[in-house]
Image 1 (cartoon, rainbow, N blue to C red):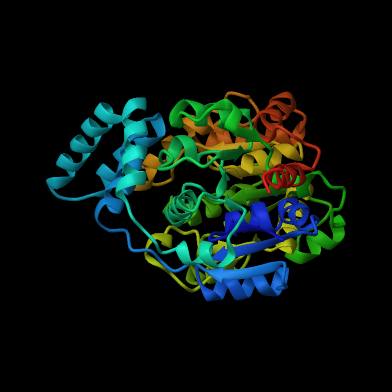
Image 2: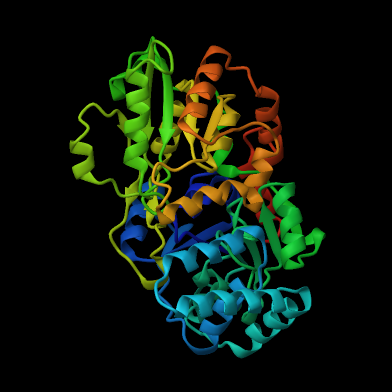
Amino acid sequence: MKTIFVTSFEGVETKNVLRSSIFETILKEPDTRVVIFTKDPERAAYHKKEFGESERILYEVAPPIPILGLDRFFQWLKFALLRTKTTDLRRLVRFKSRKGVWRHFRYWFGLLVNRLIARKYFLLLARRLDYYLVTNHAYDSFFERYKPDLVFLANIFFEPEVHFLRAAKHHDVKVIGFINSWDKVTARCVLRLLPDKLVVFNDIVKGEVIHYNGVKEEDIFVGGIPQYDIYFRPEVLARETFCQRFGLDPRKKIIVYAPHGSSYSDSDWDMIDLLYSLNKEGSFGEDVEILVRFHPYDVIDEAELKKRPHLKYDYSGVRFSSKIAYYQRGDDWDMDTSELAHLRDILYHMSLLICYASSLSIDAAIFGRPVININFELKPESLFSYFRQYSEIAHYKKVLDTDGVRLVASPEELVSAVRRYLENPSLDKEGRARLVQEQCKFTDGKSGERIGKYILQFV
């Protein structure tokens, strides 16, 4: 029996792999078993309940790895070796958020180092030294026990998965890495080590991986976005049933507002109040309701909720309790299949989406719904005002260049855009179609199956 290792440390990995046709397609091969690696027993138990456990579906908890010495140095180096408009902005945000005179040294030193070493030959040298100088045997026992035929790393940027890749190379096991996001190549860091093959969402990410990471074109497979497959299926909840969930009037148009989240904004509640106030005044027109969809990684302030008993909102997802050093980045969440279907129903039944720079803009465009991105802060003196500039960063500029999303710089522009879209939803539909074509690549609902078959080629 052939054995495939699959990592599932974060909710986005589970969503893209285990809950997509990738997992289903792999298991259709009867002579194949999958070992799923999670970061703690709590998540392992959660997965067992949903996906089951058998001789072909096994679970292992990967122990936390302390990042020390040379390992810590090369972890820092992977950020210093990437130079984009996004990384420059993030460096500036960190500078603005820090206090004391040392922040100036950190900023200018980081900028200088980045300008000096963010070059292809330094990247190649760093990878070679990283492989030979960093020693870590934490995951060797898994390879010795199962003798896998293939490792599929569902988040190749994540530090534990770098060490899975390192162990696989030492044991001469093939590795396929998955770029499971549209922004990490330009917004996060370079790849410390390269797998044998890479799977990416679209041609845009493929070009970025080649440019910033020096990956050969023939080692990249464009498979589409498996988490979006559910959007291209005909099932959808009846409008009356859907509206009943939130106490919405099915006869009214629904505006969905997706807050930025407490990690990126301190004015989400102010924006919610503004939208409700404008709607109460009739600024958006007649027969309009607002539904607020909080991000599953965010933690809602219950005190703020109690102040707004009128609020109609959606708060999906499971937030896990365990926290381990390098996981503390708001990633300890998950959405099961029913909640993904629930999001699909929201996108289908809404008339309009209001959000910040977000991948949710693509989700809405798939359903042909108009999208408005907020490009102003109600607290301009706040540190979070710098996040407003994220609409200009590398990956999101490609979204705006399609003309499928309307950017508004003031409450007045917001009201004007809402009214225009509600009166004529077909405005900018060509741009939205272009956005879907560029970012999704495939709209056949078979991206998971496509990637699953690609994986099976190597076992």
